[in-house]
Length: 298
Image (tube, rainbow, N blue to C red; front, side, top):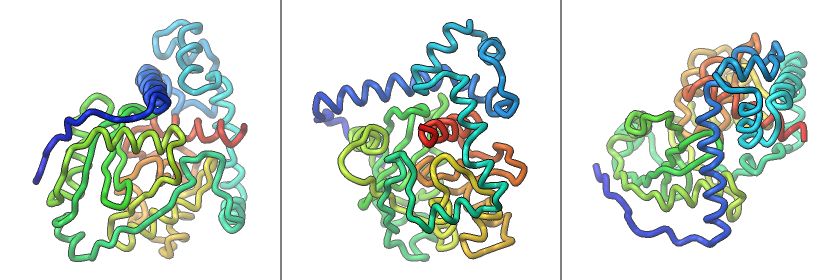
């Protein structure tokens, strides 16, 4: 396994440099708000007050509101209201009709994060079984609005996005074990460029490469049917993937999704509507769903 490190300087424009600084600021603010988001993930349906949320994380209401608003772009109250009034609830009550109609109409949601070009890597089943032997993957760290991001890039596009909450080694090991036999090369410059494309309106659509078994890829593509600001049940995703009733297998495929956020496994929720089962933590799931709900609500 190659673990070479690209130490070359990053050549980007002043505008891109400023965008990276803003991403880094939001990443830091997210880490400060992670405890609050974890608390809100359990209680958003109760519409907690600003004082209650601030007290839960040991901040004054003034400082809590200031930091949260700087990160989210809206107040904590507006953020919680957006989750509570998201299309997710109406979609669930409608049995998926709203989701199907949106997909059939070709709607892609308000965020450029989901204006994606999806490409399936030409990897044979044998190569997948060999755990990535013969594949070349570059990787690196870059800031995101949801914390420090680990980007994994194949020859044709983004193949992995993971998040770190302070243990970078564990985050990398979690991603590396998916393709341990691949040729891994560290390139932080490429990761920062990919972060700009994903989160700061960089050049053109973001190429996303789906590398996995045929069933896993089918489930990941099914997740893309869920518009931003909405959710779907595991049963709905299973049906879209052509395996109605295969809830456990579908859940396993969702959990194995290597491209968090961009392949929106965070939008798959339990039938009860609870925010459960996210590989990168309920705080981050609440953060992502909340930001998408805010964007969808305008």
